[in-house]
Length: 142
Image 1 (spheres, rainbow, N blue to C red):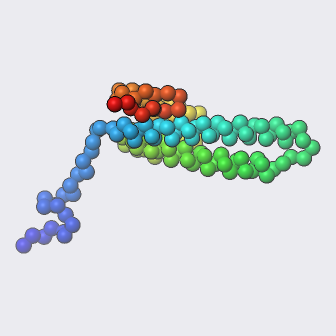
Image 2 (spheres, helix red, strand yellow):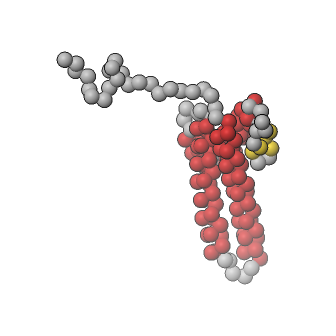
Image 3 (spheres, rainbow, N blue to C red):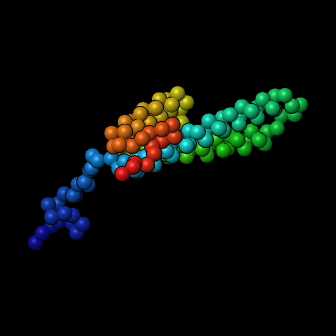
């Protein structure tokens, strides 16, 4: 009689997951586009914060509600950018894709992580025949 557990493979060891070294280029193009749009949204909220602070400095009363709202929007966008960075790192087959996402919350380190990921994604997309512009890759023409 065989003493193997009921959920094991015939050899007793779990079957390894097939790892593909091939990167899915359409998914990579979408992931890069999400990251770049998130960065653009983040820059927009920073400019909105600066404008609101300059108006508040010139006013007799400081309006806290607009600054609080913009800060909340910036937090939501930062979380969205971190998720987009995680997706881009996962698409690029990083072993630890959550690490760049966490590092994206630190100002200068996040910028370096973003530049490295974007550079690698751009290189892979150009090798695949995509045209890469300022806001990501254009669809591949057949």
